Length: 224
Image (cartoon, rainbow, N blue to C red; front, side, top):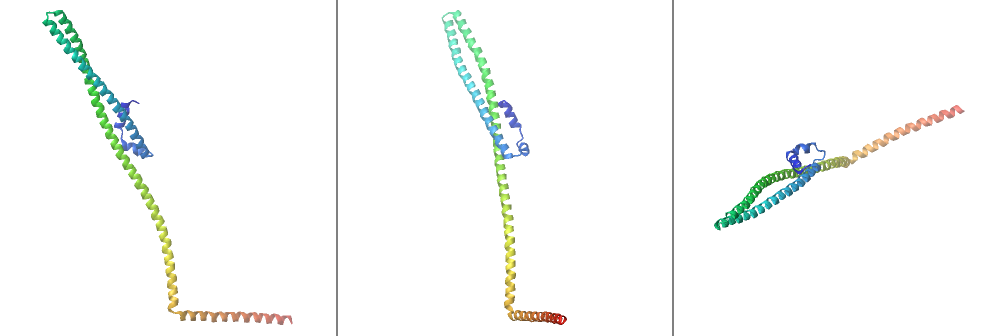
């Protein structure tokens, strides 16, 4: 692909549309910027070469102008000396250089147009690169914010889980303290309740013993 074909493709491209379709927008825009910068270097090199050619033509024109002035002076000298034959020869030489001057001037005009277009292309490409770099900064910032958001959500979930466990433990501890406080408020009632439980337990156990004794006596009577 030629430099100017690449330039046209780059300038006419829609950065946003290309990035929307890309699986990895950050990587895509890095590659795009790299290609733009490489194309810019080639454009500047081409423009520099054209400017060098224009400078060469300018030097050639200056040299030819000197020859034109020289042959013009010689033609005048020959006329002054009555040498029309030499004057004609001098004028013929002058015409040769003048025809070359016209050709070089046309070439210089063409170089001016090429340089003007190249400088315009360079400016447009630099604007495109600046826009791409701005888009790259925005993408990097969005990526960073997304990472920060994900980390914050993880921290929130972890903190919420820890808080739930802590709140449960605090609630359990609070109930334990309330029960202990209740026992301290009326220790006599607790003692009475405990004594009552003991008395009923003794009654239940005595009935069981009496029943076992009766069964034993009945068994012994049957054996007699």
